Amino acid sequence: MRILFLSFIICVPFLSYSQNKLQKAVNTFVGDPEMQFASISFCAIDMEKNTVLSEHNPDQSLITASTMKAITTGTALAILGQDFKFETYLEYDGTIKDGVLNGNLYFTGTGDPSLGSPFMEEADKLPVLSGEFAQALKKAGIKSIKGNVIGDGSYFEAATTVPSWQWMDMGNHFGAGITGINLHDNLYFIGLQQTNVLGAQPQIKYIRPEQHLKFSNELTSAEKNTGDNAYIFAAPFGSEAWIRGTIPVGSGSFSIMGAVTDPEFFSADWLFHALKSQGITIIGKPLSYRTSKNKLERKKIHTHYSPSLSKLILHTNENSRNLYCEAYVKMIGKKLKKEGSQESGIAAINDFWRTRGIDTKGFFMEDGSGLSARNGVSAKIMAQMLRKMFIDKASFPNYYNLLAISGETGNFKYFGKGTILQSNLHGKGGTMNRVRSYTGYVTTKSKRKVAFSIIVNNFNCSGTAIRQRVENLLITIANMEE
Image (tube, rainbow, N blue to C red):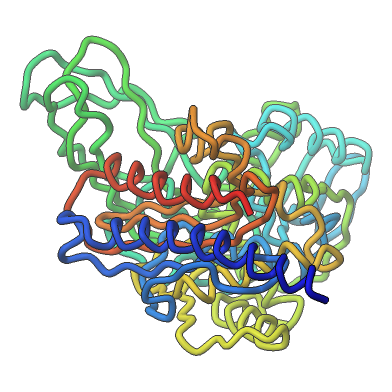
């Protein structure tokens, strides 16, 4: 008994010293002059003991940016399952006779965000899909279509974007909307010819895939190395787009990405031309289901499956894919609330966490990606959710390895590089104007796992400087030895 007591009084000072060192690092971070006007929420939890190691304003709800994805992807993993796959169908109405479809062909989705993705390695690219779908029609005996090709995204609600997203975001690739049918990440590339004259207008060289939009080019050229400061302004289902801002001067090509305004029509238009290029005759035209409202009975002739959800989530977290998270939210709503809407999905996510003991007062979720500036989450709620995702391996299988790794992958590639954090930090970062957030897991020198979250709004320093300050704080956690 005496030995145990002596062990206790010997260990306590070490534990206190380590935690005091961490709290000192937190106080240094908060007291930095660049944080004078900032709102900061921080919480670090020992996952095994479920004790708070250090905190600062842990219950203050702040704008999270992309760390919201950590909650969305973890919840999707638990509700939908790691082996879940989105399905996309080719369907038809009417009859097939002598190689002719006397009816319409439907391109029907259930929300797959990765269909024809130009970025996700495991997703089939557009040329592969073109061959797959043409072969499926030929196998069904269809060589000619007398009707229309209809893109049907009605599995999800008609609204593609979140109401609180900003106008300057929605026309750009990171603000792409989601429907039941999506293709090529619902984005397109604009190739621009640079000019060597400051203030001159770069000219549009190409748009791929082709878009049925009227573009007004208001771009100008800025100094070298100023990067991509071009923005595309376009409304959902709109027919016009404005390109504003700057790209650097130069003599080469410069590419920017825009968001498809009507995913249903875009998908139908692509399939229409893809099938024609494969030798299938089509008499009709491409249409969106939203405008056609065709209620005729259909028959299914082909099903395409997405990669597994675990692969989708890894790609989402490593590359911060907004579109994918919005698909997860609506699919969660469809599964649990029988409605594929943003509202039903968010309600289901709140219900899910309340049943797992998380007090969701102060958890304000507007979207799944973190693009909305009306999102609000506290560091304590975030860290508590992350802890549950780690310890409940039955509900959240392999979630730890579905996050970006510091110094190695995705948006964490340059975070913690060359420090103890490299490979010992799995997490998700978030960036918006005057917002930086990081959440995840740190492994300490003594192999303890710590769930942490830090959210900073309205700091004065550069993005690089705030990242370095956060790194220093997390390095202190990683260096804990007991």
